[in-house]
Structure formats: C-alpha cells, structure tokens
Length: 342
Image 1: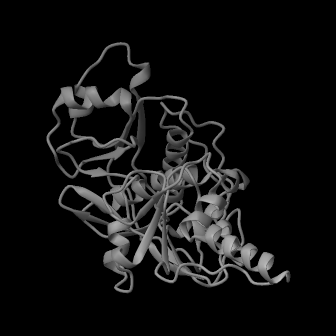
Image 2: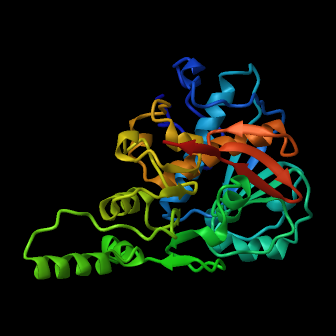
C-alpha cells in the first residue's frame, strides 16, 4: 500500500490522507486486532540519523493513516522532537497526554531527570542495545528470545543443543562467531569436518583410490540455535547445509529471516524456530520502499505501526499486530512471535 507522506512532518499533526481503500491490509498471514484512538498521543523522540528510529516514526505515521480510515473522528498524534527544543522543560513529559517515548542515548538523562511516575499513559521504547533501568512501562525490541525458545519447545534441551551467537551468552553450549569470520570454516571446525576430511585424504593416500563420501557431522550435536544480531541466519544456514551430510535441526530466533528477500525454497525442511509475522508475509505490501528495508528497519517500522494501535486499544489488553501478540507482564510489554517450520 502506498501512503502519501509528502505533506507530513515530524513536528506537525497535519497529514495527507491516503486515498486507497484500507481493505488491502487484509492478509491470510496477518491478523490485526481492532483498535481506535480516543485521546491524543505525544510521540517523544530525539532526532538523529539512525535509520531504525526513522523507520519507527514512519510506522507510527502509517499506523495513524490506517486508524484514520476506520473511524470518522480520530484523535491527534503530536511529534515532539527534543533535539529542536531551545530549552529543556519537563512539563512536556509530565503532562497528562498519552506518551509514546522512543529512548535513545540523548533522552536517557532527560527521562531520568524528569522522574516520571509510572502509569498506563506512558510507554517507553528502548532504542538502545545496552540495558537501562526505568520504573516505567517499557518495550525492549532487543529482547533475547533464547530462554523463551527453550521453554516453548519441550524437544529442545540446552545440553543437547549448541548456540551460534555473535554475542556473549550465559549458556554453556555456545560458539562465538564474528561478522568478519569465515563462517563456513568456523562451522566445519565445530562439526570436526576438518578431521573427517583429513581421514578421507589419508585413506585415499593409503588405498590409492578416490573416496566419494561427504564427511559426517558429530552425532552429539543435532540441534543448532542461531542467536545473532549482526549476522543474519540467511548467511549462516547455507554454511550449515554446505558442511553437513545429515541435516541437523536448525532453530532461529525472531529477526533472523526475511522472506521479503529470500524464498522458503532456499531453506531446508529441518528449519524451525520463532519469527515475527511481518518478516514471513511478503504478500503484505505497504509500498516498494518497505520491501527494500533491512530486517531491523522492517521490524522497527512494524513496531511503530503496532504500538500506535496497541496504545489505542490499551496496553493492558492483548493485541495482535505485525510483530505478533503483545501482552503486558508487570511493567514490560512482551511480543510473542509465531512458531515457524519449513
């Protein structure tokens, strides 16, 4: 769907209305909960050149257009950019208007100084990869789903699986891989393919005959979990397939696969895991520009879209959006992704 944004600015409440019918949002793969805005919402942010933040704000705008098509009278959303404020004033944060706050480094100190009281009219999106402590309702898009995967699938046990990760984990069975590494070689070492190849060459030398046999994989590693932030599963899975004669079960976590760019045919039948619905639904079009976005940009765009609808519904209610099912646990909003399997 093409949204007309040419007359829309981040500090204005005036938007160009979309002329297309909203029915194009219907999809057999995506179910959106009903929602409506009954009060104004302030969108608080500190503008920077981050593409993720930009996508998040775009998603909010298009969520507004989506709601505008479904109700005759719509509340206003007001974008407040603290980078353009001449003087700091906590009153813009402490007013009774509902507030959706995108927290980056520039806003952390401001938020702490204002000492806001927690209530259901405030929701903070953590736009930082490092952890911050806030006594407010928060949603952390960088939430680690490794523990959730173990708990949601009884067939996966920590001691019987190995985690491929590009960050440190508390788990015992993990292999650290880096973005600039030769991933194929790293995986071959994990499965001792190099030793199998050495044995094969030695047998060929002794027998003077060529041996046509692909090296085996270690039978004690049958479940591989991909838990990476900087390296996509789309790069790792082919390396696993290339190295192994017997296919292990490969589990992915949310934000790993993007079927807007890759076909399901490129993955083997033993691929399972968790994923946000929007990345699996490449027939759910916003516009051509959305399909070109990187995974993180798609996710934050969808998060902005969802949170406006979620806020309108009420953050204590369950909500189905582009990223999955939203629910509130104490002061944290949790997104439950979908189980996948190819």
